Length: 464
Image (cartoon, rainbow, N blue to C red; front, side, top):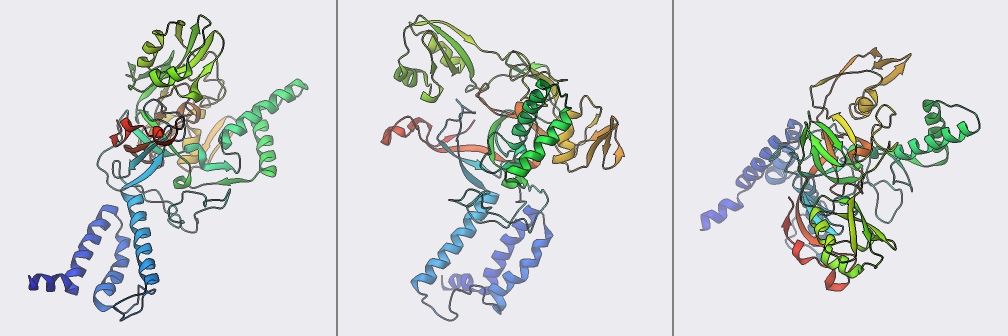
């Protein structure tokens, strides 16, 4: 026993184990640059020339309480940061876009190892923050003095169709401070459309490009507009319904993948028009028996509009005052729908067909399909894209084709009529994927109080 204790205290033995663990971690990360830290580990355990724990007094067996607290705090920050980057991170569901699969008030862990941890693009950041310092409106919580390129290390699996995925918001690269929702590009397109209409009313016909430039210049002069790196954009959670290489289409609200009907997950819901005999709904009964939140109860004298799953529809039909229950469908072109072109008069219920780009695949480019891929080419894959005299130029050269450098995904919310998802802002690049929603550890219902807020049936559940 004494020999084992002596072995465990031996500096060479301790150094060997620590360095072995560090070497395995370095191989996982895949960066031999980390070998530069090997001398530091050697000095900590063997030579001890540098006083790395500078907050401690050398040669003192018993440190003060303050030093012990500092020691514990530094260890906790380092450990938590490594866990957050490489293993898992805690998130909460703020909106109803994924109901009834994920509910507002669900607290969950998102696995980083599921698809492989993505190394941070901006490693210099305040611990336990995302993009803004707490209690401030606009103070950045990170520095861009160091910027690392996209790198994802080995994971347990690949993204699969129907996975619930957390990702950095693709349209969140440019942000209007104090007015972040809807996103900058949506506001810009909307204001440009209004500007063109108002000028047309005065007899002035303005091109879309000129209207876009005029409104953009106006916004940049009068608003605080910033850009954010990929890893500091807002986190979104949606279901992956389209894989790289898939062709998607939505017809009358039904999703088709590669020409086949895509089975809806159990929690997928659509808006329904409910006609009644004039008798009012009992809101408490709707909440308790059907599962409709108070925020979703749009009730008038003889009708109501509720987001419902198939199972909820059957429950609603049993109400004695319900005369009819009809699934709603958006009609006509929706200018807020991707890719925002009159060549694609789509809406949330009738969309596509649309090809989801796959790394290495090549697409023929023309002015008609350019709106589908221009953000991929110019923003996500950082090329200089221009159109001059009806000719497409990429990095200064005429381009009739383009080969995709990354895989892309199509994400949609399970609350199909109340989700701002890929139908509104397009593809999700692979370098935006954060992790997989894995485990719900707490769920709170904001419509209730005290212990009644806890949804006991959702605690400690794996996400499917």
